[in-house]
Amino acid sequence: MIKTDVIDQIAFELFEAEKQKKAVNKFVDAYPELDEALAYQVQEHLVEMKCKEENTKRIGLKLGLTSKAKQEMMGVHEPSYGILLESMQLFEGEKISLAPFIHAKLEPEIAFIFNKELKGPHVTVADVLQATEYIAPAVEIIDSRFHGFKFTLADAVADNSSSSRFIIGERFYSPKNFDLKLMGMVFKQNGEVVATGAGAAVMGHPARAIAWLANRLYKVGQSIQPGEVVLSGSLSAAIKIEAGDHFTAGFDGLGSVEAIFTE
Ligand code: 0L1
Ligand code: MG
Image 1: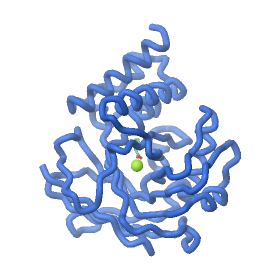
Image 2: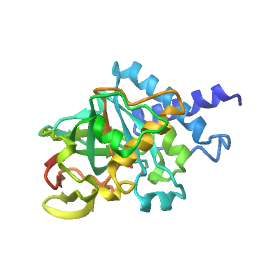
Image 3: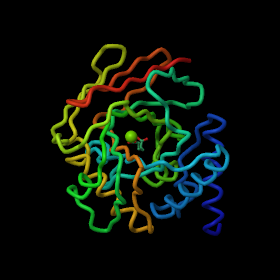
Image 4: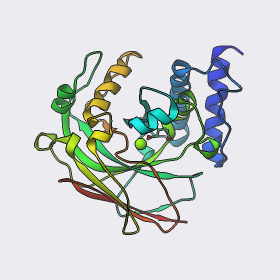
């Protein structure tokens, strides 16, 4: 198959999998040519299709696979990124129906909101912190379109890095008063602690993940734009969501963000 056909075919299958709520098998077996570079092209095409269908637009980006444990599990040394669309943003306090998801999980993350363009190839942690207008507590709902969350890095990248929805807490803070690598996090499901973490779980420092993103985007002629939001990557393992669940993710000094789920 020629390259554009492969891109179209995989993007279409992922688009339909999400729409029909029907998981698919990973693609690398059927399409051995699916490497990371091609996967980002599939992701771009998939995002274009979603923007058209949902009449929405890009409002930021997310990082995935930012923890050492997850990278080791996948046999990779780098994180991945995905695109956040306006239609993916949910708000604290609204009850979230599980109806649109295949097998959703929740991740506690730190949201960065930028007031300047962040453009590679030499962005540092200091540059990220300088360009950050605000940080805020956040949770990401991930929902892989692959059976059992079983995929290679290229599959996950094509699937927009398993992105689905996200909620950003309502209070925003300047990053200047925090040491983000030491920021503690307590993740509760129905009042019970299900995970704890610290900022350093995200590549040693959450801003390092953002610097990686800006430098990686440079390779495809892109940058992080002023006003965009970036989700850092999870401070703990993702937790499976069940109907009726009430989650809170509390971050030292930032307060907490909650998410409530129904059938
Ligand atoms: O946000 C994430 O860390 C998810 C990245 C893609 C891999 C996965 O679904 O676990
Ligand atoms: Mg995430």
